[in-house]
Length: 272
Image (tube, rainbow, N blue to C red):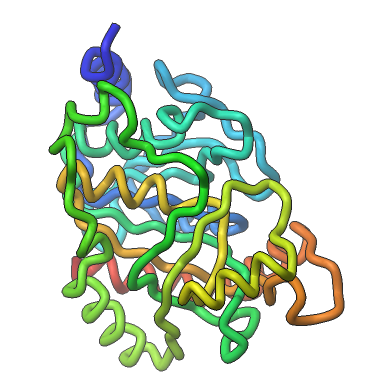
């Protein structure tokens, strides 16, 4: 069975649960799944029930999709995401994005917890992604199925759409939220980066590092979905402070910024 057949089967399964046609996709990073509390007319489906969906196994990620209305818009939300470091095939990681496209999504909000490489940033800051560097060791478009929803050699000049970034900046100003902007560098994980790797990241022009987002952003851009990336700084990257890094810290900062970030995303959705 090829990719389009699998997507069609997954689509039919979800459509049997709801009549809503989602126009905005969203992937929620570590500790942010409570955004779904604000969704009305919603249906929830565990990843494990959807044909050809992989399972999520990371603390802080619920592992379900939620389809409903948020800020007056129809949304397809992944409460939790699939990570390459879990051992998933990269095609499994990007399958939800391809499914969003198949179901009618035109725009995508990617959220993530990141480590700050830029020493001017601090935990709790919110950053809009302006570009990325892919050091995950793979590209999600490799293989014969990589051309089924787009070009063989897609342009990646403008993945994170300028018009969406400007709207998000204006929204932040309205809400009196301080916003950073910067470049996201993706490593595969699951180990945190070494101090030497962080020095390299800084030399390459990265402002933050993470273990997700990039495969989804590449795939969305490839199949014609407009992307905005919103990250929250969960910790300073290795070697900047003396304390060791931990996933517990990521989740704790997520709880602190959750309310602010939820309100921010709801306002962004209104103007998308």
